Amino acid sequence: VEPFLISASLIGVMAQRLVRLICEQCKEPYQPSKTLVEKWGLKDKKNITFYRGRGCDYCKGTGFRGRSGIFELMSVDDDIREMVIGGGSTVALRKKARVKGMKLLSEDGLNTVLSGVTTIEEVARVSEEHGELKSKEEELVAESAVKPIATVEKFVARQVQVKASDLVEYQKR
Image (tube, rainbow, N blue to C red; front, top):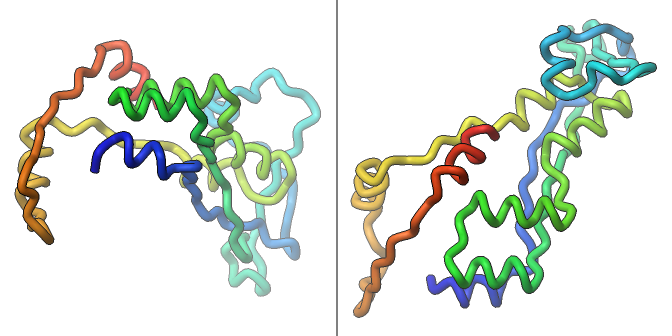
């Protein structure tokens, strides 16, 4: 699909994950591990109470009852459209969206933790990205495994250049 078709059709891109909700019947305050608190940038924050479910008959001993969503929404404006048409990398698109105010899954999840709705471990479980960039060989093997539904008469291959700094930023996430 041509980039200009994608950019003209897109209004936004949303990612969502479901997090388990702390059981209200056995909810109790607790202190998560220091490394987890430091990793989420909450080390210097005062007066934060973290909660978890200790497990009861109501939640069948899990400490959780029900689920709720955490979300990430990238609104597609003219700047983002231009980047898509120009073949901008995922990392560059994401950086631009962050500058324009996009809130990450982890940030939305952290708000649910601070509201006492779920645990920090639960948000870490569903929001941490372990994606890796595939090598050219892996991409070619994956593409050859997919059988086309229809043939395309004219195919124009293009190579996308990824800067080393973009790759480093991507791997940090």
